[in-house]
Image 1 (cartoon, helix red, strand yellow):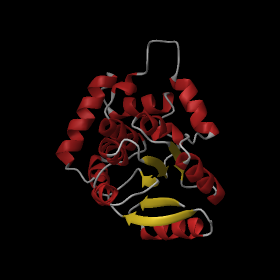
Image 2 (cartoon, rainbow, N blue to C red):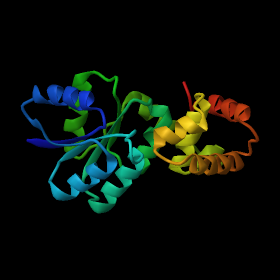
Image 3 (cartoon, helix red, strand yellow):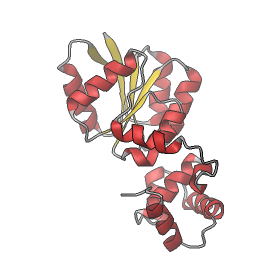
Image 4 (tube, helix red, strand yellow):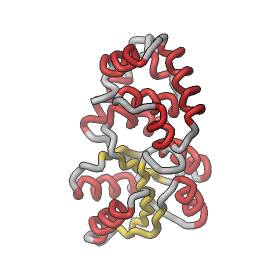
Length: 210
């Protein structure tokens, strides 16, 4: 039996996932968490084969939670389940130690297949993610400037690019407006940009937003 923990802050999402996995004979939901800190603590206290981890948690970014879980238990398998498409966070998640990245709009059987695959010790790579990885592995030594951004800076970039204000980003990431302003200043400097219009054009040019 594959023991799974679901880490997602939306109760209705957790209930839906439990219903999907409850229809299988070899997967059981053995734990739930509604925040990043709770996911980390439960993972330390109980034994799981796979953690289904949402990338957008109310207290900590999913990538940060992933890194901490892998630091605590390097052999623990984590499958990222996110509302964001692969082009935004998938490669960062894989590099941080995720065994796979799945969009929440995926079909239920795709989720079941992904869990079984990563539980067996393999990576779960969708065709879209495979293309993103192929694009990232290039002989060209000059990488896009945004690859130098931290996870928080990258997140701030994507949110500004889709029209979110600093106040909205602050609320979304559970950080102070001052901290978000610092991230914005840093990413603007790294990308050699001067205003939000240039930032949006950069994001569109590099396919960082839909």
